[in-house]
Length: 312
Image (cartoon, rainbow, N blue to C red; front, top):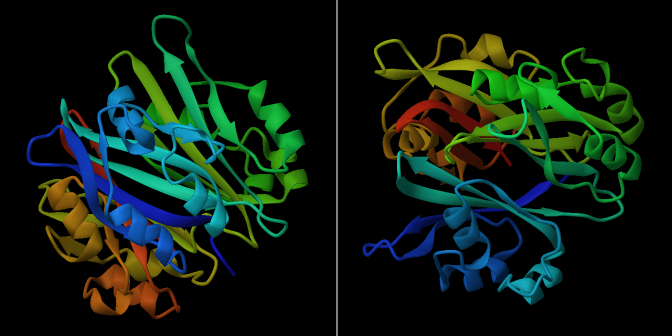
């Protein structure tokens, strides 16, 4: 079983802070794509990473054959069809741009959405852009939807300013498009806030089906009251029904493992081999046959509020 997210890569500012250079990534079988990416750099507003840097909000590219996307031929050869770039800012300082690429084929079902609120124009989130593959009915419903604070998955993320994992979309009262999700075969969603553009609120939503999950396991960790260690907040794993119980007492020190590194640096971190990660979450995931992970820091006003772990 493959994941809907097939490639993740992290780009960071160079010493002069005038371009983004390759930092790390997870590529699975797409090693030609990796080899080309490692040699590249992106200026301000250049390519997918550079455009997210300039915009200060997520940029969704539904067609990787777009003329300004520099790796179109390689993406086509790898079967990658859409990409999303998500900047991470500590105040006005860009720490990194996280780029994720998804694939679409006859077996893949999933969607990526970016929701936006302009505080000067409306009190609701509206769809900024979305990638839906062959899910025409779900796309139609989404493009005609609006979410006030606290309503639906986008609205819940907006109100809380926190990442949210929502399983069983077709039967969840918290997911207002549950009937459409049930018909489309979508079962799991995760929402990530992006509070980095003043006066604007952005929420990125990933939705996927059982056969092609966004990731195989999701975890949300938050700093404790003394900001000394990370504590488990929520998660979901089809392979591990006892996920919450097994991690409730776990604590992660600053700098420990993939999650601790992302917390310490404010930069998304990857682990290509969970067997090499000594943190309790990595050991628990490896015990259920998982091999790699991505840790995404959620910053607000320069302070880390949460770390999202996606196991691919």
